[in-house]
Image (cartoon, rainbow over the protein chains, first blue to last red):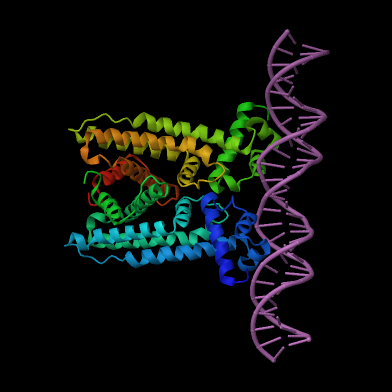
Length: 200
Length: 200
DNA sequence: TTAACTCTATACTGAACGGTATATAAAGTC
DNA sequence: GACTTTATATACCGTTCAGTATAGAGTTAA
């Protein structure tokens, strides 16, 4: 194997699978290279360290996720039209999350695990750089909504976190095979529940 | 140190702190015994293995959490009285979670991390025995509610998970010092939002 | 052909890992 | 006090850990 792209990608794919299944700490470099069918110095040649592998892996996937959320989370107010105001934005954001999770289930398992990663974990600081960008985007979005909708004012943070909390539980259910679909209908359902409560 | 209870408790306390901060895999037995100021054979005398420490730790705390939730999660219907039906049950359950998290913040950080623990983690099977009991209790509660309130019917699972998702995000915010209080008012606020949506 | 650069390997490093063998100290019982 | 049981230690075990030194293969340009 002498192709730069193939080797890097191969290593990242093996690392993704292993980190996703067992967590970073429990996966050894030896295990990654065994799965990738290369030797350790090759991995170190490309990535310098185990953490280097982790860093590049997170850059690769979080960049995608964050771009996706960045693209759909801009709130432009239409307070007089329910179907052109908060509702469609949240449906779009939710659908984007669902789409991403369906396309990259292994990575999304890592995203879920990262949500509550212990702060003294050896890779917390690396993870932090990428993971919380989406939080900022969502928070920004809710602050925009709070400017127009006064009953959201001063609740932006908890709404933003609650919303993401619900999205993540839906995705976790899907990834656990407890829910068979994650589509636009599900997104609408989720947003409807979030916006209007359990009776609606 | 020759007191059985003191040594066991001491070891468990050190393990709790370390597991909470760094995750099980990243904490070595040497580190635990150094913190506990004992030697390894002493730990092995009481707990047989590193996993034994983990198991006993989880039994100690999950038993408390699960009992607490068991006690307050029984739904007895009062559909004609809002303040004697779903609302107060959910407030009580939420308050119980808050109380537990405030009393045992270190352990609750572990609970949060356990929520999305990778399935091939070496301690997933141990954790699973204790962690999901609360899920079952909540699910059972929501099924009871769904028998009386037909608009909850067929949504029990996602409501149950969504509810816990929100509770956990509130607690996570508190544990991250992003929210200064977790009291009965906060619980009411959470339940109100959950039941009635973001505008209410 | 040679030199330089890129890529991949074998063999190795010292430290750390979970756990163990054995001796001894401390506590309990008769 | 003698004996038994419980509790704690020193020293050790084989394996695994992340990472490294060095050699060699392949490619390219002069």
